[in-house]
Length: 265
Image (cartoon, rainbow, N blue to C red; front, side, top):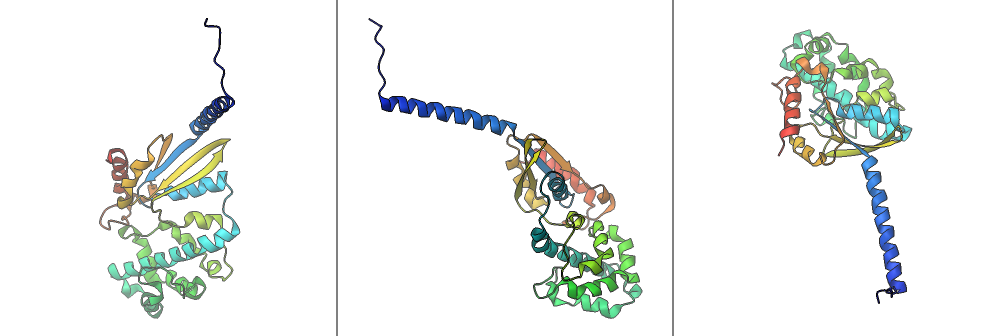
């Protein structure tokens, strides 16, 4: 008695083997997931989160393919240039600097150009090769330079001065952005963008999230099993006006954004 072992059928043995294989695969998947590093990039809008991510892509990833530079980044950079000049022209009017403008015809031509949709963006019918010479004239105008000296009183991205300094090259029909041009490009993040990079044989899942106020409620969904958080703040914004709140200093948004990321419901 008690010496007779029950005999499993072939079907039962096959089921047991499948179960062992599933358990082993689950264990391997768990170990793999545990080794992944989840990194969040948080910060106020325009603080430089996406710039940090682009730098990591250049250093640790494959960078940017030439086709991606021409088809994806060149149009964005062109829009950045026009938007920056539009902000300067608007500032000339708001700060009552029109008496210092020398090239008034070019100024009026730029401001009244409907092809920019009234928001500083290039329409499909207008290329930087056409409007580039006009932007060059305006950038060297004393009135625009006076507005630039007062740039802390209105919202503009300071690094875009690099674009104005190379506007001739950027106006060429076959212009291809450099990696530096891409790093300087302002590209608003909407929602949550995931990028996977391998750094020192470790897989990093990097999450870049929008920094505007209406995007911050989405941050809470990223904190599950997070390994680290990089909170980005722009040192250059200590005296700048914010994009979303024209009367508030941009530097004041960083503590608010950090508090929002911690206390968000």
